[in-house]
Length: 108
Image (cartoon, rainbow, N blue to C red; front, top):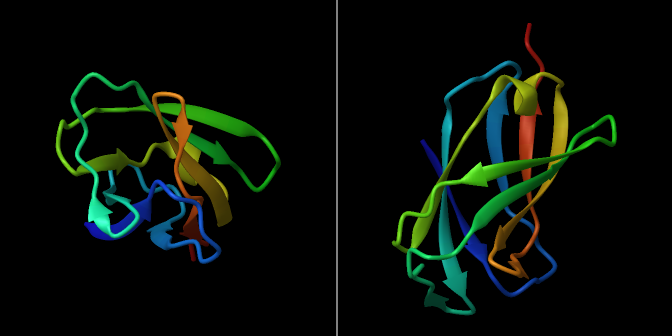
């Protein structure tokens, strides 16, 4: 499992997670921060992952609220069917986090 740090405060440098094309069930852990401090979910927030795919389509995937200072993204075939860089943002309630990328490595 790859882990990246994800801040609620948007800044310039976006972290990147890595998967292979057609990966299903690969887990990417997002450690949540609010500035320099860990951000802990209350457990009541609605969390969604917004993904802009290579072809321009946008997907919204539900994310399980862990009531912890992290969430886990589990890849689906639809997320990883095309190689390239996916532009992603997590929405926690009405707040968007810093953007991050999922790099989909092309299959051989």
